[in-house]
Length: 447
Image 1 (cartoon, rainbow, N blue to C red):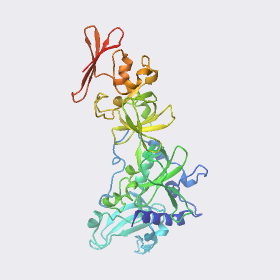
Image 2 (cartoon, helix red, strand yellow; image 1 turned 135 degrees about the vertical axis):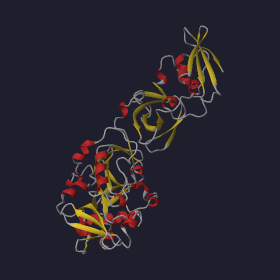
Image 3 (cartoon, rainbow, N blue to C red; image 1 turned 45 degrees about the vertical axis):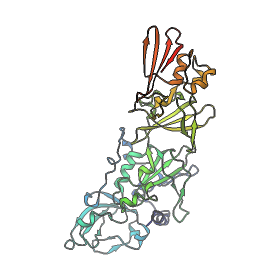
């Protein structure tokens, strides 16, 4: 079944079965969440998370595997919770039987929570039963393993049809509610019960948009976590994702398919640090006026690459770390044009290099200087062209040298004069700028 067919099946059934006038159970109110647009009134099902959400961890975790471990069927433990979310085909092919062996309609179990209760050998190693207890009613049900033993079956990716893993949803509610995320997928969804599918696909969400998680609920069996987010304009949209792939029924190779890959969390969202602006690494630059030390490429609001020349004044609006990356995303504004740009920049773990080297890494001190060169004391507009080209001449002030060449690798003395030394990482480039110690004007440039 293709991705679209999978979503179509899930939504067409849910649109018919769950948008009616029936009274929602406690679990349905908790786990069924929907997008709410600015002009809509929130429904009961679109409520916020429960008391679990108040315990969001303060520390930053590098790997989602800590929060969302994968459990193969062989490793399931009694008490694991699942919700019945039938695909369209499951309405025809029944999944569960009651203790009398009578098959039960999946429609009658829609949105019921099933608690795993182990397995037993019913027929001498074949057709074993995987047992469940319905949380709402206390009734018992089982799934019969087809044509092989449980031990043989559990190592495969088949799992148990119709069941979306709720413990993964609960963990997502704890760790994601209220957090800021960054969009990285090329498509998202908006609930729309008037359509056959039950949703509308949207493709106008820009990459790298900052959004806030406003609701977390149940999705489908394959993608059990439904994450509803709100952008800066108040528009809500959602994505179905899987973290652990527990009981997804999909092989790893299927999850790498271009039509599936954005339903893994890392290919749909990035986590960003809410307290980024106060992090010691970023305090030097956060909110400050800067200028470009090198010719560089920035991305504009449409993610188009724009070439920016040296000595262009900018203001850093925000700095955002990115989980699993050494790079932080810097948002800048151009005071002259009013446009905003972004760039991924390193703030740690890289060596300084001279700004005249042929290659520049993205370490922040190599590419941005503090202040506005056009307003700096001792920087003359007549010399801006030389400064932009990294040229230093006799009579230049110390600030003009800083603007042209950046901070020196080292400083020293030569008799009564002050010497600034610029070296490349490779050692192939070595320039000395010699100042009159009293006037701090350049008297000589040696190489």
